[in-house]
Amino acid sequence: MFEFIVNHRYEVATLTAEHLWLVAVSMTLAILIGVPLGILLTRRPGWKAVILGSTNVIQTIPSLALFGLLLPLPWLGVRADRLTVTALVLYALLPIVRNTYVGISGVEGAVREAAVGMGMTSRELLWHIELPLATPVILTGVRVATVITIGVATIAAAIGAGGLGEFIFRGLAMVDTHVILAGAVPAALMALLADAALGLVQSGFQRRIR
Amino acid sequence: MSYPSEPVVEFANVSFRVDSRTLLNELNFAIHSGETLMLLGRSGSGKTTSLKLINRLLVPSEGEVRVEGKSTTQWDVVKLRRHIGYAIQDVGLFPHYTVEQNVAVIPKLEGWPRERVAARVQEVLQIVGLPSREFLKRYPNQLSGGQRQRVGLARALAADPPILLMDEPFGALDPITRAEIQREFKALQQRLQKTIVFVTHDVGEALLLGSRIALMESGNLHGIYTPREFVHSGDAEVKPYIDAFRATQQILSA
Image (tube, rainbow over all chains, first blue to last red; front, side, top):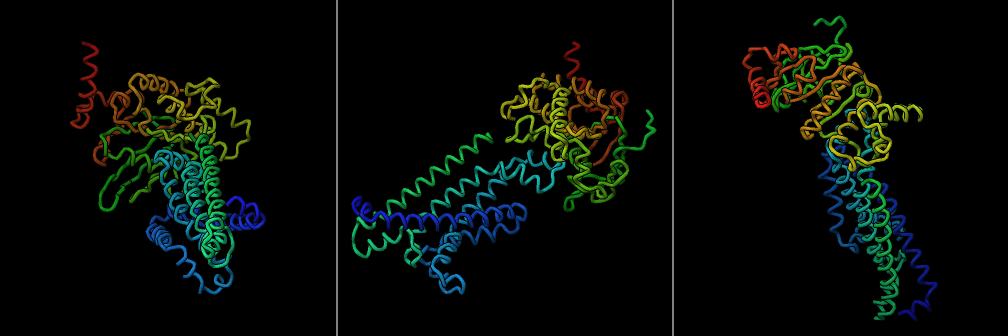
């Protein structure tokens, strides 16, 4: 396996970079969509069933099937990377939305009452109190979503979006374990590293918040 | 006692309902500048609800609550609340802020210059009996219950609001710390000349700190008494409170 990786180091590097790029773009979008959605749920609890329900349903769709479902869509189906990023964002939404909602809802009642009672606007409450206190919980969601995304992104190769999945699918076709591992091991390492790195960020926040 | 000034807070035919349940029934009373009105009553009598009507955490179903002559619904809600200090039993200190940051919240949001904020934080911490600089950088979880309550009070005082609302602020403290803080608070009242509305179920506290005591009973205002009137009242609703209070006092004088 190592021999294969060394011999194909440029390809490994390119595919790893592709993989990272897919994950980074998807996670950025998922956070930009998921956190505001989670905040919205705390302000409009009536939407909770619909939003959490639908993100939940999306998670239950097998990833390959989700790619298939998105394929016929006009703008998305045209390019593999658009399609992949959309699918990855959809997968990553649930943990981010849910944890944002749970984190903000978990802010102690007395803290909220004091903040509102002393004259904080809804926006001040959100930025000064709720979001900072919910950050460790939100980061847990981001961490889970990142690991999921790194894993699911390997399947993107099936529809030609590149990434480390290329090796895995090629290896499967060739019945060559070395080639499979050349994709699987870097992907697993990436997931472990991302998990550890986000864990560090998270404990940093926890320490600040106490 | 006579109050020449116009009332600072006034309840005019105030009722408050949730669904069809009446929590407050046609309250009428006025609170004047510099006085401390104690809202006394059992749990569920409507004390806290009344308090929350003053800073518009709640809005009356009928009638109006006037603050400085203006209905709370006419006020800009943020301005109203920043005009009124608010201290509650659970304190609600912001756990991610130091003592200094907690106390400075409203002055900062009000855009005070940095030096003025810092000076004011020192000043109010001094007022509530936490003069030492070592407290500034501590977090709420590094404070005792009594210290937290003092910081809560300092935070309520920080922007120098003319009105203070206090919801059983000393209720969760051990008896010795409570007595200590009550004594200090009494001295503080005379110095600061704030108009204070104070919720309690503790008769001793009501008698000690109140200039007048409003007795509430299941959503109704039963009557308003000076501490002296309260003690000597023969009223059937007042008597149980006095009896309960006397019972503890007798042990001491025996």
